[in-house]
Amino acid sequence: MDLPNVSSALGILHPVCITKGRNAEVWDEAGQRYIDFIGGIGVLNLGHGHPAVVEAVKAQVDTLMHSAFNALPHRGYLSVVERLDQFVPVSYPLGCMLTNSGAEATENA
Image (cartoon, rainbow, N blue to C red; front, side):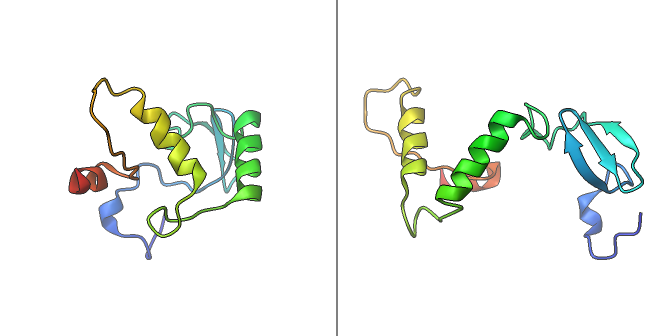
């Protein structure tokens, strides 16, 4: 697979380009079906296109697509951090920050 615009540091595991996914399967551009043992690197534990997940995503997109919390706070973020704080067994006030990577979490710890 020729990928001239993709950094060689990425290290492609499989030389196919997938076009769709359903449950635990994905298909490539040639229509070949594969079992998705990678699962989106952890984000697809319910599989591709699970009806409950699709419904929740559609409802959220209809409400609010995205907002950087530090620029425009929103209830979704607050709800998540309030719930997470309930699981931390300490008696002092907590401050929670959601990040998208371990590097970001480490930088802000």
